[in-house]
Amino acid sequence: MDGSLLRALRASRPAGVVVAATGSGNTTADLLAAAQELMGDGTIIAQTTRCPHGTVAPIYAFPGGGATWQRAGALPAVFDGPKTRVALALASLPGSIGPRWVACSRASGRPRESHTLR
Figure 1: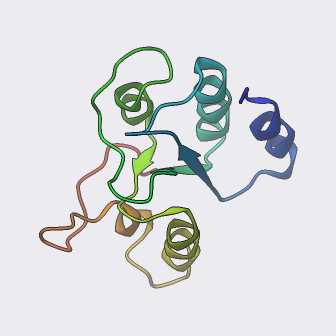
Figure 2: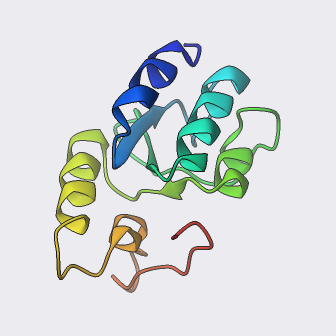
């Protein structure tokens, strides 16, 4: 998948977008580039995997690999796609702890620190 869908969303200035990647968080380089454009506009990008078990991880550093997504500022989600969408929506509510909740550690349940929050 290329980045055309994310680029089409840019004009609507979404507050958040969930990207369901393959494996441990890998996509095409163009999809990552389009996500970076959205993040530059202030959109929160949460990244999850389409795999039935497991989470995204910063393992592969090729253009579009999971490590490059996290370095770019995407929040690694520990939930599947539908649950990540709900978590991102809840995290956007006034009085919530914010989008870091999407990237909670499974072991502790506490938010991970993230340099992506604006």
